[in-house]
Image (cartoon, rainbow, N blue to C red):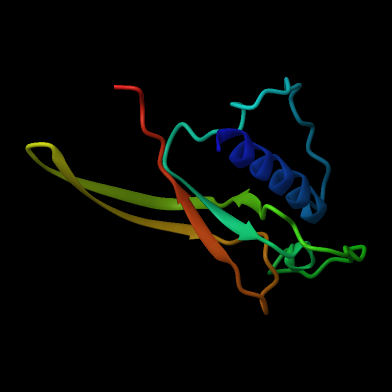
Length: 123
């Protein structure tokens, strides 16, 4: 499960590189299955069709992409604000998360689902 999630995020990051206007130097990275696992609450755009990936503000020329992503690509979204409220009662926790993210990677006329990932520690 973690390997599939990590590979979906890696593919989503590769897709999102298509919409950058200026090249940004990326740090050297090692290949590992745990590299793309979240360490904090994250929200991802779920992209089953790579043709919808583009800048919603300024349309750019994108080469045609054919096919579907299986499993869907996950592109991390830009966080604008998040609040978390946790109520605990014995062995039950009620968690309420309120967040605002910007969907910066999907064309304005398209829709996408979002997936929230909350890491849970070993303890």
